Image (cartoon, rainbow, N blue to C red; front, side, top):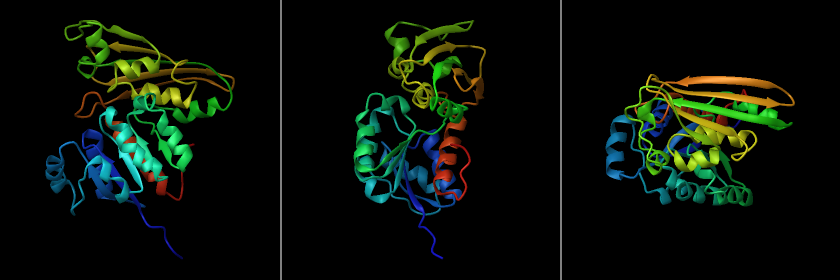
Length: 272
């Protein structure tokens, strides 16, 4: 009885998420192997990998990743998503996308995937219950509302705050800094609200989903509350995420990517 060769995984970006995925692959994910890595600072990436991997792993520019792997995990700045994803999708391969907000500005990637038989996967990330939202979307969803509350340091520097001269560094009380849609938030908060875009893609889209963002000086965790009303169920969910060393990203985001990769090669898949 023959066994399928392991899926070759490339990791684009070696921040908090990328390094966690590398560590998991090196520790051992059944059916997967770390094939290559790309980072902005190639020499710096080689130095980091020398202590994180037991064997030499190719560190190459983004454009050189595709021939080396079957799947690429995009864990890089959002602006790099097209450069990372396009070669894989043209080759009919898979891309695991963390920068979900960037998909709204690069919708041609979905057309590429359709045309060449590739696939874009957006993992659950820092949210909860996307399976339930996706299931409800097979019927009729009447409304989806999300309220995000974050510690101040996880929001400082967001383009929306800079452009609108909103200072939050010294606030003493919770402050609502945004009310709108995930499409608008993806532009104004590109490093913060990929979760809202993922929710909208699972449900009723980035223009009908309602979103509020609050800065809260008392919080130490990124908190998301979701309320969904549909013809099959009405439900609400809340998750409090412990930030990683990057305060804009929760620890569970990397774990979600690892769980996603594990599913791809597993004999049993739980969840839709």
